[in-house]
Length: 70
Image 1 (tube, rainbow, N blue to C red):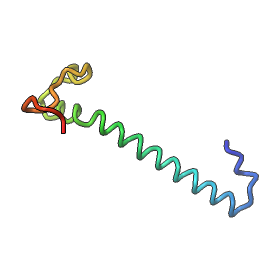
Image 2: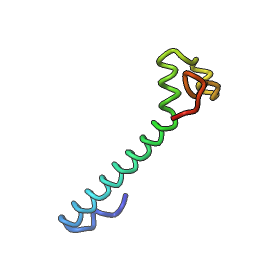
Image 3: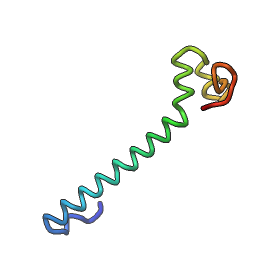
């Protein structure tokens, strides 16, 4: 896939470790972003403060007291 099979043993191992670390970083940032965007809505649905369809269409209040998001 990346052509690393043509490298020597040590170089191949180093490149493979680098690829795995880069993938882990991308997943960490991606899942963190999803949690930031979707976490409050999912939490309100699970707590029973908002219906699922309302959360999907963005019709849930931002906070319990009607205030702004923190």
